[in-house]
Image (cartoon, rainbow, N blue to C red; front, side, top):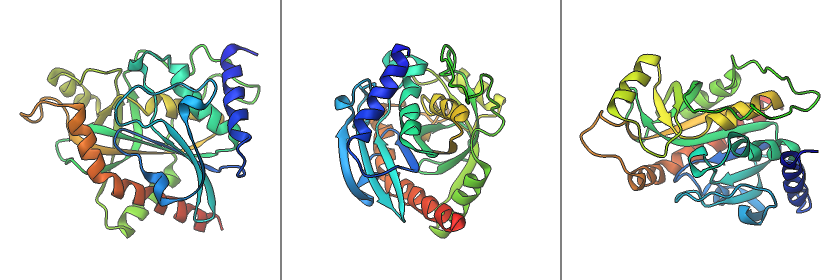
Length: 278
């Protein structure tokens, strides 16, 4: 067993000992989007600093807490805060929480982020359903990772984001009277925001929003067979599209204002999927 595999085993073992059953949903919350745990029936919560082998977030707006609870007859693990490549972690470490969630029983994964709008038709506060992504990060969470016997070495990435869950999210948004967009997410390393020239390049590539997270986690989820729903909160227009300079504090404030809508959408999707599955 490699050191990396040992970290997965140790973290999963630590969390399994807390009990509560097998979670079928996992939710990873982005900048300023924490607080979902207060809307579910909680059983236990743990600071991620206390989980052996778990990478610890160093970024404001990422609380670093894992909560186990229930909603609509489903058990779920909610991760309030993630880690990023720009913090100095490897792509494999960024993908480690996804692999731990899978080891604990999670088979459905919701990934959220605060993103800059590349599409000029998008407004701050809009929620974008991620239909696909463009990875402009310099590394891949699957590189250097030895897959388990049942995991594909060369996973197909043609449907990273589950079409049925995209449809469920669109229906949930309509029921909640939320205006949702659908688009392609571009991921960059960060932590500096993109330049206006880079924004123009991403637009020409077909990107609708840009962030510094999510894509490594989604890519780590695919060979594990996880069904992924990706949601971006458009917190601001990307660099150069507005005169105002960008700041992390502004991104957090925008995400905080829209967090209730994001949380309501996630919970409604879980309810709808549960009803469809019977």
